[in-house]
Length: 135
Image (cartoon, rainbow, N blue to C red; front, side):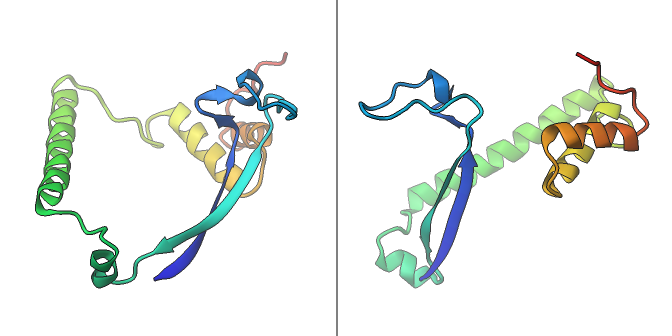
């Protein structure tokens, strides 16, 4: 086995904003927009023998169910795409959709450390789009 550290940031809990939740006695409610960081260990298996020895190896029926779900999902996606093609629907790409270009550029800029607002403004400038509406 090997251990991997998992971490993330939560901006909501249980499908609600933090300010919409009930809190245990003695705790101060978190304001909307708060980010809660978390981390912890995940013990990963490195061999199939470890999986079996831990009793985590699925039985044959679960393996068949898993494979069948994958087959069904693949067939569904293929049929859906064929229906879209038959209806003349063109998949939005960065080459044919300005909103897709903007969304992808914003993702890249956020990954580089910019805030949502900075990334959106920068992307609009880079893509020569109209400035966002002033409020």
